[in-house]
Amino acid sequence: MLRWSIIFLIVAIIAAVFGFGGVASAAAGIAKVLFFIFLVLFIISLIFGRRT
Image (tube, rainbow, N blue to C red; front, side, top):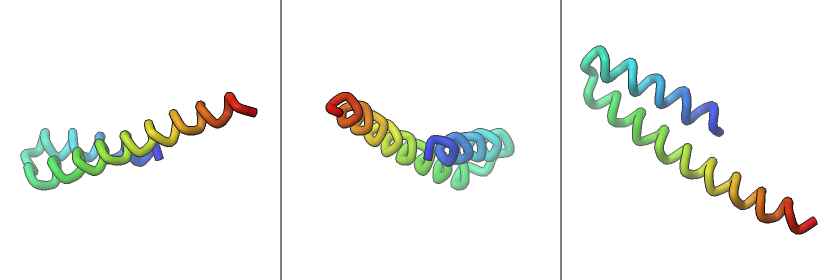
């Protein structure tokens, strides 16, 4: 999942450089959502991994 957020971030940066505003903002939004989902799942796995 982190790989997908990085891919969408790179797409957003490339689209912003070439001036595609709508594509850049959409890709950046998707990258942000995927990153936060990855972060929450990572923290949950750390918490439950410590219990066992």
